[in-house]
Image 1 (tube, rainbow, N blue to C red):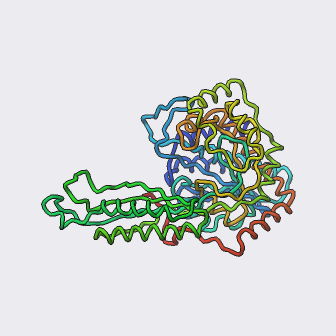
Image 2: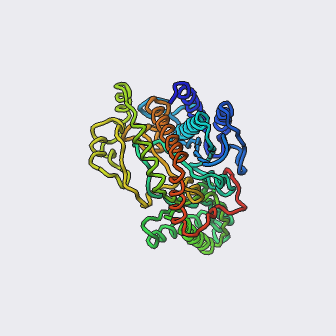
Image 3: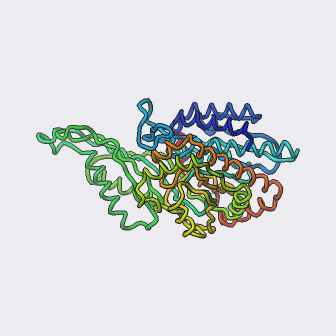
Length: 466
């Protein structure tokens, strides 16, 4: 990576870390990235797909069309002072980049810059497409982009995610649907006239009981999560007329999650019938499972091994050690990636190093790991693959203040720049060897088995904030 690029990209990621804007509110982050891309010769369209904070940047012409995916949304409750290895929320803001999307978006732009430079220097056909995808954490921004056709013209999509390991992502993730259930009852005096009341809060509680009984009769890989976000008031002597509960429903495929969602909706309708209330079901978001592509994973592995793992200074290791020590040692081996070729070597590295300084080789997998990402929707439109690079110390987990606190460190920067180099090198390989793209498309077609992508979000639902 050129020093000039590295300095510019560090400035970009630092600014986005500071903005810390959540789903569909990433106005400053989007504007900063759009301006950066325009300064470097990209034609940029924004807004797109009914999202003010989404963009598409394009450079070049002809085939292949390589798409890089950028994210930049933050999380609620992740405010944290940079480089401080103890929890210290910033009084001026509640949000923070606890999942490293400021790095993700910047690293993707870095890959687009390097691939653009490659096309220019070699005077060859090819199109760089960088898609700015808002609201990954809550909102399913990529699903709206996929529904609107913004990935249809690309040959492949490449992306990455900040993590604790250097590795190629493999396997799948859970499809999910999120919805609000608004119950409407009748208020009354809870002592003098309880017979006149119809409790919306009772309906929420009965729905939750029903959902918990439903757990016994769903697949082991499926998940139901809920949060009561409106209880109807603070006075127990008033029958609560309004209550709201939010459900997140997960399964291993789009078809399965739709069926499970309908079962949960039936539970809600039953709760309304039992309590004499009514219920409004408000669809919030939905996204697909990831469709893996082993052919692209192989290309990414070759590029990863070619680029190599960064070297870390004594100061960086001491920095990472302080964050690693902020975790209970018993949790260091929790959530290890599946399909690691040499799991003992990884465990040894976790035990004796402050941060990942090896390439974690993985066996191709179709296993569905817990968690969801709207990258899944992209993977159902075209061949898609991802890598992870170590941007944080061992022990630190996603959606933690430790990830936020390390988000502007030199370790995080090295991880983002590594991602830029690996993704751009993979794009070069695909350009020079079109048969690798053909192989990825052939695998994609086999996995689709004649199916067509149909967005889980109903056509009448637009990007929104609730």
